[in-house]
Image (cartoon, rainbow, N blue to C red; front, side, top):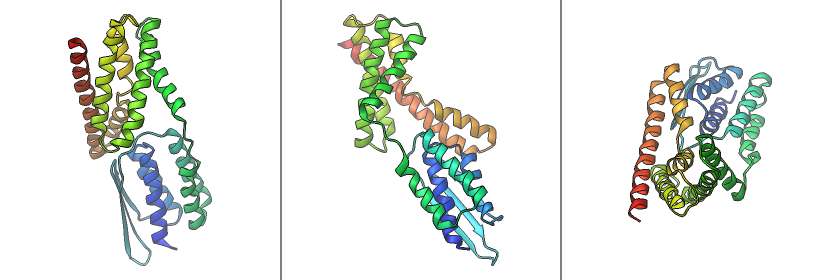
Length: 253
C-alpha cells in the first residue's frame, strides 16, 4: 500500500470539500471514510476552515502526517456535490489510487463557469425579489435590480484586484449600494430608500457562514465555529460601515 499517495488523496479531497464550503464535520468524516475504505483504521483527521491535518500509523508502526493550508474560499454547491459523489464511490468501489487521484483531479476541470452576463443577471434578480418580498413597488424592485448589477460588477472585478481582502470589497459594495438607493429615489426612480437598500444589501449578508457556524457550535467544533463566526461578524461590520458612509455621502449630495 502506498500510504503517502493515500494521504495525498485524502488531503486533496478535504481541500476540495473545504474550498466548496463544506461543513467541518463533512470534511473530517469524508477523509476518515476514504482512509478507512483503503484499510487504515488508525487515521486521525483535524480540520478548521483554513487548515487540514491528517495523520496515520501504518501497520509497520510508521507515522505519516500531511498538513494543508487552505486559502480563502466561498460556497460552490455543485463542486461540493461532485466531491461527495466521488467520496461515496471511493468508499464503495475502492478504486486503485492512481485512478482515484485522476478522478479527483478531473473535478475542477468539469466545473461549470457562467458568463459575466449570466452572473450579473443573478446579482440583479436576487435583490429585486427581496425588495418585492419586503413590500416594495415595481420601481423599487427595478432600482434594486440595477444596484444588484452594479454590485455584481464590483464583486467580479474586485475579486481580481483584491482577492484576499473581502472586508474592503464588502464595505465598498455596501457603500455604493447605500449611495445609489437614495439617488434613485431622488431621481424619481423608486419610492422607498429602506426597501431598495435592504434588498440590495442582502447580496452581501453572510448567511451561509452564520448557518455553518451555528452548525459547528452544535456539533462541538468550537474552534471552527469561532473562526467562521468571526468572519461573518467582520462581514457584517463591513456592511454596516459601508452603509453608513454611503448614506452619509448620499445625504450630503
